[in-house]
Image (cartoon, rainbow, N blue to C red; front, side, top):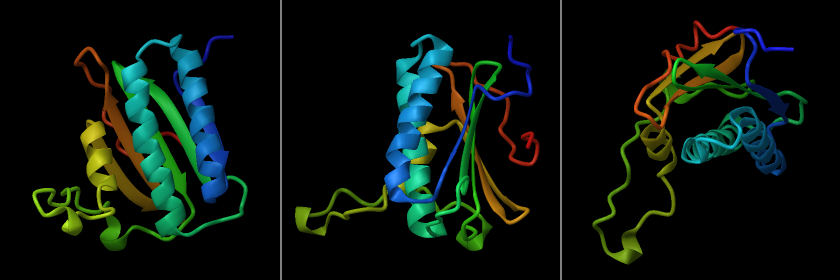
Length: 163
C-alpha cells in the first residue's frame, strides 16, 4: 500500500544509551537505502554522520535514559531532499538553542589541537537548515538536508512537523 504524505519514510526509536546509538544508525541507514533504492549514497552518508553526532550528544549531554522510546527519529521526503526530526526526553539545550557551530582553531601546534568540539560544526556543515525547540518535555531537533542535485526540501520547522 502506498505511503500517505503524512507518513514518514522512516520512524524508529531507541533508549538513550550509547550501546543503542550504533544499532539505531544501522537501522536508519538500511531503511533509507531501501526507501531510496540505494540512490543518493552521498546524501545518506551526510544524514548518517549528522544523526550520529546528534544521538551521541543526546546520550552524553541530555542524559542517558533506559526508557524505551526515549529518542525518536523520523525521516520524511521533502520536495527535493530529506527532513529529519530527532526528539528526546532529556535535559533541554543550554540557552534553548544548539551550541555555536564555530569549529576549533586548527592552526595551532599539534600539542594544542583539541580532542573535541567539532560536532555541532559538522552537523551544521552537513545540513541546509537546523531548528531546535523544547515542547511537551521533549527536545525536538529538525534538520533539512539538501538533495544532491542542488535543490532543497521544504523547511523543517520543528513547530510545523507533524507529531
